[in-house]
Length: 175
Image 1 (tube, helix red, strand yellow):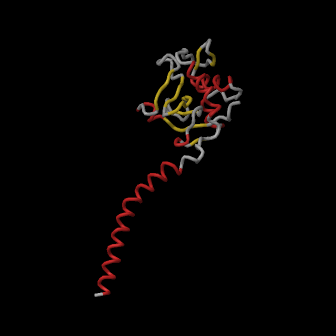
Image 2: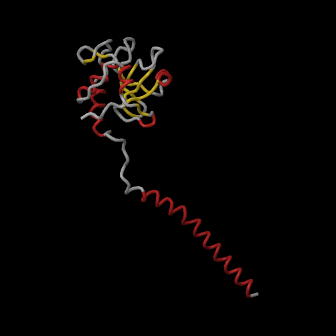
Image 3: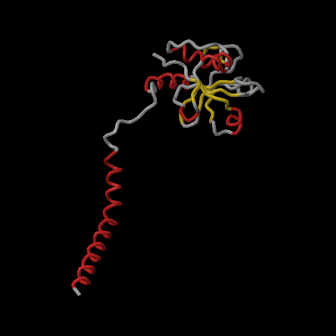
């Protein structure tokens, strides 16, 4: 009888403890999630803060006419002339052609893109025939072609650009 009471008492206490645990554990996890991470510094890719003026300037050139072989707002831009001009304004010299940019600039994985990175595309059946400047959220600004007529923003989600995307490059940090 004494053993039976002992067992019943322990079983009762275990049930109470389990119910408390089932109640408090999710609350503690939520609390830890909400407060535990608040003291951690935000992790940002290196050198993104000073790239925003560069991206803003590139966006200010939307509507500038496409002109093959040109690299100025007054004359117009081809794709490589556009990104070369934008970076030059911030003191960074880039090669003149897309092929040279692809060959000389450091490669960046697509999942590590930051604003200001260069996006490379195969639009003419050979590697690296078009370049644009990454903005954010899979959008980029570029001088697409004589047919499109002007500097504009496009999306990597667009089937044309998604199929032709071949890689990204990161010029050295401006400033």
